[in-house]
Length: 155
Image 1 (cartoon, rainbow, N blue to C red):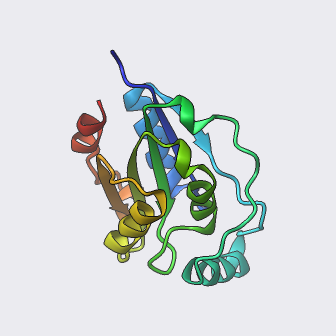
Image 2 (spheres, rainbow, N blue to C red):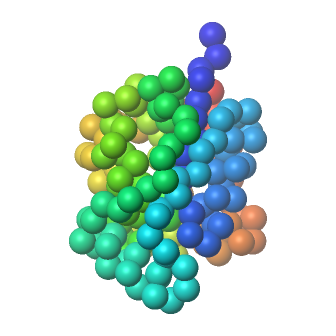
Image 3 (cartoon, one colour):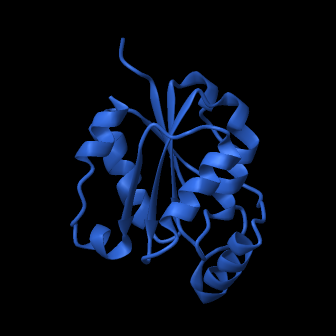
């Protein structure tokens, strides 16, 4: 029986969105973008976002459409902000962790904070991921990343 998979992500600049859309396409699965109700655009949004991420603050997110409890695997993607997951993804995991059967995580980063972010996502969700994937913003921009191993673990 084929697994029912949902890709959920937050993206401020489109980098994480690009990876999420590719994962969804390769797995032929549903996708949902998490929308932060707080304006994270521009330099002010960048600064407050980093501060909120470091403080491990939750935020208000737009109501989700897809119920993660309806899926065998929820693949959760976040940019790394100040070596932390984004407030929008922290909120999504906090609100839905009881519904997750299995999880996988991916993140995009300027360069650091990957392992810490994955560990925090694991602790917050209460689930060990069946797969993880990370790429730097530069790798995504230049298409120099390889999702094959990640995708295989999810099939």
